[in-house]
Amino acid sequence: MAMAILVISNIFAWWQLNGQFYFKENGIWFWHNPMWMATVLGVPIGYMFWWSTKLSYEHFGTVWNIRMIGFGVGTIIFGILSWTFLEEIPTLKTIICILLAVAIILIQVTNLVGE
Image (tube, rainbow, N blue to C red; front, top):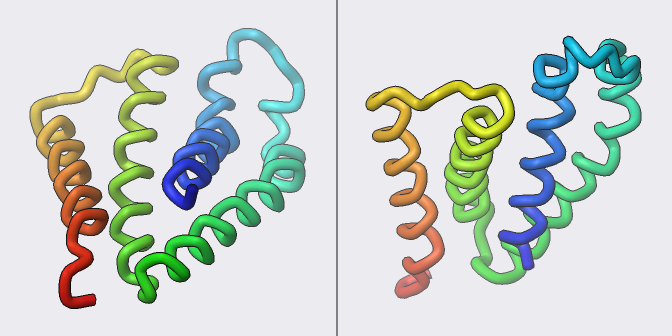
């Protein structure tokens, strides 16, 4: 559940911060008003990150796991959405970083022994 909320919150955060570049030519007014977007989306996104952290802490017993998982998930979501909507093709360096993000997630999710 924590992972699902983390993915959704990262998707919303990407749109909150980068939607301005996707919609700049369409003239959609609320994407051109950063204070409006920060205000409207900031509270629900912050709450989703908080809830994901709470659930992760209850499961793993530490905050380090969700920090590392959050970094990895955020990197992957950012890469996918930037490629899909902004047509920013990942370079080899970026692909390697995304693979490292996947490795971080897998290490944190599967490393329950001794914790």
